[in-house]
Length: 425
Image 1: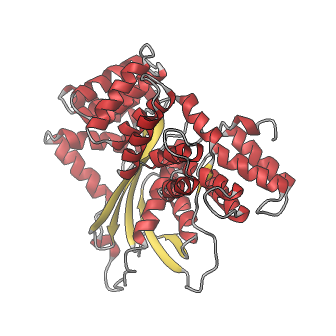
Image 2: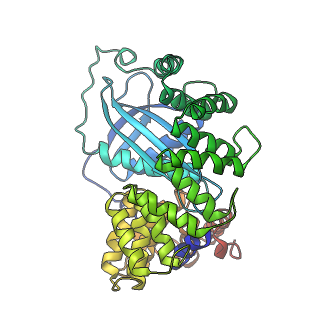
């Protein structure tokens, strides 16, 4: 599966950041309180600032007086074709403690910083949604520390519920210990909690314990144990465990490689209305991995997953429309799909959209915008985006010619796994 994902990146290369343009509208200041580990807090803040600037929105961190409180976490997970990846999730609250919405996004591109990629998707979605919320007028008479639930209280509640026998709360607390969210980071305590919840039948606990063993988080890496735990979670009906189990079969980690079995699991997940399963099943049909190659069927599955919010599926479907694989060639439709993926935070989608703008495929040629898209993808950790942006600087296309900058970008692309750039850096 890893090679197939890499192939997609090689053949296409698209994404779309918000247009960097001047505006007559004044810059709006958005004050946020982020509850996360120091590393994750800074990572999310950087991404919020990056996405906010394109909308005349300046994000500032504030623990005293804030417009929104964001409870944020990044969790490790197994992904097809890779040894692992990350899921970033956030809950956004108004200053009075009312929850506005929740977001969860995962990374799938098999190279680079998966935490940064997943966080970039969440930050992009947060900005897009908050732009639709009228600016709040804070009351100076209120004390924000009293109006917003505190992270320490949330942890205390989880502890209380866990001690009272609520398994789901124990598993959530374990994830907090894995991330150091509200508690000192302790992989040992996390493991102890989910070992108990998994033994008691909590399938998410089994999945989390599988993540710990497959990822070597505080224990010796044990893919075989990870497979066993994903199997328990999957048999208990937790679809994310089935995805992770399929990933292990697809990659041959902890089990004999069996792409047919992986495809069966992805079919099961897809039938359960989980779009990520449909997207991975489509990948199998597109490249004949575990199923007979059927590009038309792949396109149908990508479309289904894309329509249900799976941005990676939109990216891959765009690729098929560019090449007329399984569908009639339609570069205009490809560009719309790539833009949809990019706007949802899919870095590869932005890279691909940049390629279409660079060459004028389905859109009016615009090398300046292409360079902007490549930069957005590169900032999100996409090696192809960095490599293509390096090419733009080397040629002076859409940016001022700068061979030193090109060399730096090619070096970054190489580090992120974009092999074509390694000979250029």
